[in-house]
Every structure is written in C-alpha cells, then in structure tokens.
Amino acid sequence: ADGDAAGSTAGARKVLVGVTACPTGIAHTYMAADALVAAAQRAGAEMHIETQGSSQVEPLDPALIARADAVVFAVDVDVRDRGRFAGKPLVAGPVKRGVDEPDKMIAEALRAADDPNAARVHGNTAEAGSSTAKDEHFGQALKRWLLTGVSYMIPFVAGGGLLIALGFLLAGYGIALTHGDSGQNNAVYTLTNYTLLNLPPEGLAYYLGAAAFQIGGVSLGFLVAALAGYIAYAMADRPGIAPGFVAGSIAVFMNAGFLGGLIGGLIAGAAAYWIGRIPTWRWLRGLMPVVIIPLFASIIASGLMLLVLGGPIAWLMTQLTEFLNSLSGASAILLGIILGLMMAFDLGGPVNKVAYAFAVAGLGAGSATNVVPFEIMAAVMAAGMVPPLALALASTVLYRKGFTKPERENGKAAWLLGASFISEGAIPFAAADPLRVIPASMVGAAVTGAISMAAGVTSRAPHGGIFVFFAIGDVAMFIVAILAGTVVSALVLVGLKKWVRRRPVDEAAAGSEAAVAAETVGQRAP
Image (cartoon, rainbow, N blue to C red; front, side, top):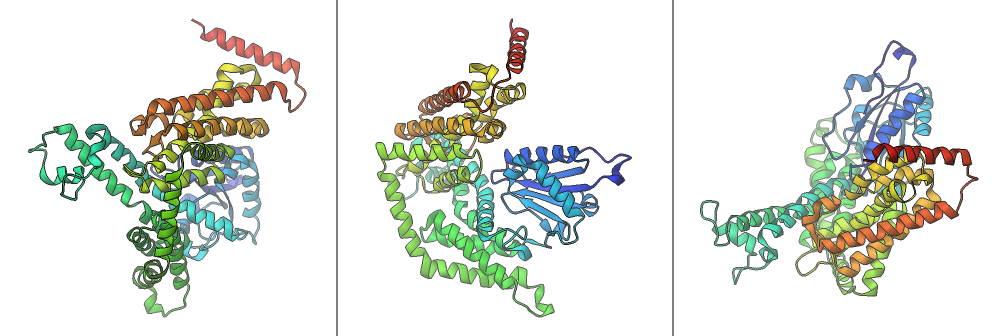
C-alpha cells in the first residue's frame, strides 16, 4: 500500500516508510497499512508500507528506504530483514496501534525525523534482540517473540489440518486407524503397498485420501519445531533458527508438546543471542553465525530439554491433556464461554490471540481418540466469527438507522469477513462505539462458544470459517452455534443503541440518516 507518488512538491514533503505485520497476516496487517497511508496523506507526508502478511511480500525499493526520513513499524511479530532500515529514526508499536492511532504514529514519525536523539533501527535483529524500540520492556519483547513463532507456525497447521480433513473426506475416518497387525495406520499401509497404477480395492478416492492424510500429518509434525525455531529467530535472527528447530524436535521426542517447544525456543533464542554477543577474533566472526552459534546454542537448549526440562514438561502436558479430556457437560460449556469471551474481548488483540494460539497449538495433539483440541479449535473459530457477523446483521438488517452510512457500508463487508473468520471486521464499529459493541460481541461469542463445546463440534482447520466446512465435524451444529451467537449479539447491540445513549441524539441527523436508508432501500427494490 503506497501513498501518492511524489510529485512536484516531493522535496517539501517528508518521506516515511514502514512495515505492518500481525501474527496471522490476514487483517490487521492490511488495515494498519491503509490507516497509516491515509494518516500520512492527511499530514502532508509521503508514506510507503511493506505489508508482511500471509500473502507474498513485495519488499520496499532500497532506493526508497535510502531516502526515507523515518521508519514506522506497526507490528506484533518480528520485522523481516530489518537491517535494510538500519540507522533510520524509528517509531514502533503494536499493529493494533497502527489501526487505532495512525495519526499519532505519523506525527511521532515526523517529529523523529527531525530529532537527532530519536530511537533508531538497529542493524539487525540479533543486535536488537530484546527490543524493537528503546522503551520496549521485557513483557512486550516476550509477546513479540511468541507471536512471531505463532505466525510462522500457523501455515504448517493450516495446510496440515486441511489436508487431514480432505483425507477423511475422501477415505473416511478409518484411514487413521491401525491396519491389522502391521503397526502402520491405513494411510501408510495403503501408500506403501499400492500405487496409482495398482490402486487399492477401495479405489482412487481412497488412495488420494490416504495421500492427503499422510501429507497433512507430516505437515502438522513440524508444528512444535516451527514454533520453537521462529521464537528463537525472533530473539537472535538467523543464527537462532537451527537451535530452535532442534530444541523443538527434542520437545516432540520427549512428548513435551507445544509447551516444550515454546520453552525450548526461548532457551535456544536466548543462548544464540548471548553467544553472538561474546567478543571474538576477527577471523572467527565469519564462522559464528553458521557454525559456532548454532552448535553451542543447540547443545545448551536441546541438552537442557533432553536431560532436565523435557520430563517435567511432558508430565505437565499429560496432566493438561487428561484435564481437557475430562471436560464434559458444564465444564466443557464453561470452557466454551471463556474462549468466546476472550475471542470477542479485543477483536484480534492480545487476549484474542492468546485464545487463538492456545487452540492452534493444541491441534498437533489431536487424534481420533483425543478430539478435545479439535473441539476447542471449533469453539474459538465459531466465536471469532460472531462479532463481524453480528455487526453486519445489526447495521444492514435490524437497525439501519442506528448506524452511520459508512458503518452500514462496513456492515456489508463484515458479512464476508465474519464468514471467513476475520474478527477484525468488527473493529471499525468497536473503534467508534466500544462500550456498546464490545460487550454485545462478548455476549454472543460466549453463547456460540458454549453451544459449540456442548455439541462437541470439531474443527481440524485453524482458519477459514464456513469455507472450510469439510474440515468441520458436525457442520450443522457449527452453523447453529454461529447463528445463535450472531442473533444474540445483534439484538443486545440494538437494545444498547436504543436505550443506552452515548450523547443526545441530533434529530435532524437521525432524520437524514433515515432518509438515506429509505432512499437506499428504494433504489434496491425490484
């Protein structure tokens, strides 16, 4: 997303460049980019944004970076190749600030451009290690490290989960069961003993289902290692990747699960970071990032996981799994309510991401005999779909005159965003009226989470909403849960807007809005 190209007045305007990135790389990344570009235009500056989202990244032109007066990072994860911006004045904050306070960030960047004492971009991530900006405290750095790991882990989970679901669709749930006394599951047995030229008795669909199931299982097998590897990468740049992946693999070997991967990644990243800071001879520096740091950081992190920490973490994960498996009835409903409340509390913010990351990380532990992780994922996804769908229902159907014309336009887009499980579709409404939108969203999301958990709905896909219906177990109840929460949220919001006023109503404005609504309906009538 770029601002207006520099024209004849380019010399009089400040040039700003920036990066936006959120853990999932789907909504906040692009919303922040658009908001910052618009804010820069209002401030009379030229703004160019590199969106490091889930789609292909188009890097900023090096020549453009060279002539930039300041840099803006609105990110929840680590910036890729941040060394390109080395030495530039820096304004950094979470991606949500780029959405909520773009004008303030741009104003700070313009001031930083003229301030010789402003915070500046470090040459590389390893140097920055624990800070993106001077005032980033440990809690913020820890959040950034963990969310970086989650953001790189999600594609493994998404692809793997959908392929496993496709395998079940084509070959049935029996594809995961052990084949006779062979010790192999039916997928491995089928792929080992048959080919496309020698199909199994069950036919082509079964064979392709076995292939999809096996590929998906292998993809999910990278979940913990990718989490650990990219946590370490966020802490120590490229030298941390290998120690992190090894520590994550050891966590899998020790049955320590995602918690082991998380801890192993933090240890590997810390070890790689501190080893990289040890003063050394010039002739040895070239070997540090490719040999010395990976070697000794792997020994430290994986050694601790294998000999000291792996056993206790594995025991803790076993206890957690047994606790989750024991949930039924009221306990499961309560868990669904809590997850629903978290998903709607800040619409893609830290609380929402904690619930989502908890669900995604658990997918790797799900199996035919342990479906609770799939139930948690379904509850989280369904609850996250409710806020934008409820706002769409309220603003475009139930109470059009209670919303401004721009809000009604946003409501039309929110139908698709909600159906796709992009909770951020409700942010424009929440930003304008948080004290009514957020509580209403939380009530409906809690209802959806409770119904989903009570009904035992499962999801093997971490994202996609209704469009990954084939990955949903009991898709009918999944839809019922979403519809129930959507209607409840919309009705609560309409009630709050009617009877809980923020300010005196301008009758003329209200009449104007009603006229616009009537005119719009009239134009669309057949």
